[in-house]
Length: 148
Image 1: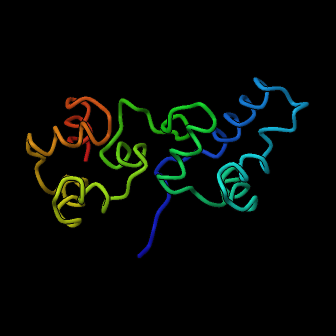
Image 2 (image 1 turned 120 degrees about the vertical axis):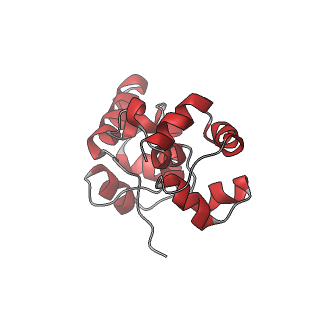
């Protein structure tokens, strides 16, 4: 299975969030360095460096962990305007894969993928469930689904 990283991930925003966190806590503590963040996440420093330098993109789950660690919302580590978010964005900002969302909706992964691509209509029941899963309003889910 090919896994893609988060759509619109912005390495510069990750670096800025880490540097802002470091400035708030003081440089003298030695905290919030790239190595420190990698250690807190339980990943190799080289993986973290690749995210900050644009060589790799974190998974949705890792994006959510990074955002929580740095005290920002997941979308703040991307260049996607929240008012232009698609279902893919909402799902990734919730730290979930298509399969995980499909399981929560009790539908097949292929059906959920078709909904995400705008190939299948999003019914009211699924819209309400996605609202809860993603932690956003039903209107936001509707608008994201309309964007495809």
